[in-house]
Structure formats: C-alpha cells, structure tokens
Image (cartoon, rainbow, N blue to C red; front, side, top):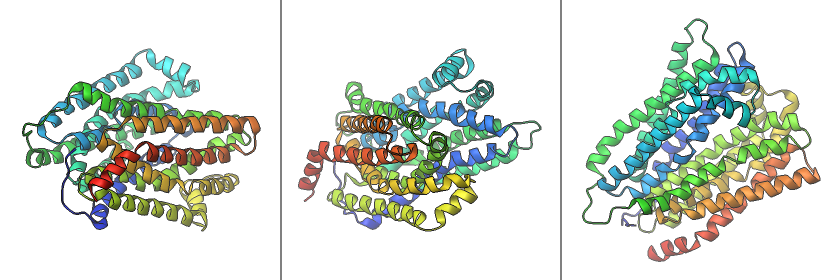
Length: 440
C-alpha cells in the first residue's frame, strides 16, 4: 500500500467525518420515517408488518454481500485500470442480486420464502408482495452507489456523499406527497415506491458527481501490478461472508426474547431502543470512512485512533444525556408514541447500551484499517466470535432465566461488542505496530 506524506490533524478528520456522519444518521432515520407514513394509512398494522418483515427486510438481506464494497473500492482503486476492473464486479453483483430479488418477488419462490422461512401471518403474505416489487431497484442501486462512494472516500469528497443522502430524503418526502394523492393507494405502496425510486436517484447522483473525480484524480496505472481476480476474491470474500453471517444477530435476539420473561414487552420495546441507540452510534460508523481516507498518510494512525475515541465518547455522552434527563421519555412519548408501561424498560435498556458507542467507533476504525492492510479474514473471525458470545450468552440466559428478555439481550450485546473489539485489536496488532513503526 502506498503512503502519502501530507501531515494530517484532527480538524482535517472532522471535516471529512461530519458529512458522512450526517448521512449515516439520516439513513438510520429513513425506515422510521416510512413506518410513520404507513401508520397513518388504513390497515396500518398489517402494512407495518409487511414492510418491516418482508418488503424492507428481504432487500436488506439481499444487499448484504455488497455492504462493504465501499471499503474495498476506497482501499483498492488506486488507479483507473483497477477501478474499471473492480467496477465490473460491482455491476455484476448488482445485476445478480436484482435478478434474485425479482425471482423472489414474482415467482412461487416468494411463498416459500415468506411462508416457510419467515413464517409471517397469511394476511401479511398477501399484502407484502406489492411492496417487495416496488423495492426492486434496491440492490443494484446500492451496489453501484457504494462502489462509487469508495472513490469519493478515497479522495476526501465526503460532502458529495452527504448531499446524495439529503437528495434521497428530499425525494422520499416528495414521492410520498405525490403518491398520497392517488385514490385508494395503500401505505405500503406509498412507502416502498418512494423508497425504491429515491435510492435509485441517489445512486444516479453519486455516479454523476464521481465522474470528475475518476477523470481528474484517479491516475492511470504507471506499470504497477493490477489486482488479479483470485487476489480480489481472497480479499473480498471475508467481507462478503461477514455481512451475510451478521444477519443471524437479529433472529437470535428475537428467538431468545420469545423464551425469556416479559417476552411480548421485550419484543415490542427492543426495536425502539436499539434503533435509537444505533442512530446515535452511527456517528461512529463514519470512523470507517475517515480511516480509509487518511490511513495512507504518514503519521496518520495515532491521530485517527484519537479521533475515533473522541467520536465514540461523543456518542456515549449523547446517550447519557438522553438516559439521565427527561429527553428519552420525551422521545418515547412524543416521537415514538410508545405505551407508557414500556418506557421504564426502555430507559434501563438504553443505559446498558451506553458504552457501545465507544466500542462501535473503534470497531469501525479497525474495519477501515483491515480494508487498508488486506487482513480481511480478521473482520470475519471477529463477527463469528461476537455471534458465538451472543449465542452462548443468550442460551445461558434462557437456561437460568435471570433477567427479563430485553435486559438479557442488551447485556449480552454489550459484552459481545467488547469481545469483538478485543478480537480486532489482538488480530490486527501486527498491522498497527507496522503503522506506528513506519510512521514514527
């Protein structure tokens, strides 16, 4: 990996970080926005179930193989020839995942997936298919957008990424307003049609604003070796498997809460609390892109590490501010409209999740470092170790029944996130030492 000699400071990292952080927080808000739209239409309960468990969840599962294509693009696309070669992979992944989406949506495979695998109620099966069809642009747009965003990250054009997210959310609102005037349209159709179009629009925007970067800043290859497909497969396969395996996390939690005390309240409350915590912790998600942008610079690692600790601490402080003031009660009552008897469980659960903001920021820093160093297998093993801790912890909770389900899930998640961070630190200590030695 090549190094650059420009000295960097914390303020440089903050300039790169804040547009991406805004994007991640806004993206975490998008499904909450569409859920609130669906809830305002007739048959809201069935349509919400169809959105959350089929029309939104299946595209999220399908996109998992290309979730980290942005990190690969930012790390590997050092010249135009490599960019054009790896763009073929991103395009074919988009086409393949879209074809699989279409196959599930319009063939009898839909009933096998929704009835047999997901086991959703029959009224949801009938309604959800329309929404799944409207979400057809999802995987292809995500693959195209993330791959090109990697180029923006590599060259520090992160504001263009945030403008894309803002454009997407403006399109969400505009589409909802236009579609809502159609007589007889249901809430699920409004939400999924708006979301499917808006993610396509964002992808097109990112492609347009990336063109001058590719033309002017991505230099031709000057005789260096272009990555071979075999080497790329060795590099990217752990990234792909990591995202696919991580999908097991949410079903494990749901299955455990259903077998622990306070099952119904836990299942109703956990998505609200976890969704809020993730929205705040997404400030640390951008630490991955910051690391990928600056890790090539001489002397960068200590500055990046300090920066990620600061961002993690900010997340912790924000969660503390909500936990120990009336702010979280206001959010739950006014924004979420959570039943009053569930609020006490929510606040205690959020307290357990407070330290995750710091572990999340540092884990994303290591993801960027891993993409740069090429030791992608360490990210995969860290996720496997994390899920093993979750599995063992939840099995122990089910056997011993020491806590209500939501507290057990939150506590196990905290422990698992700490273990994962420790694993990332241990398996990447040589890479960190090399960076500190080379840049000392």
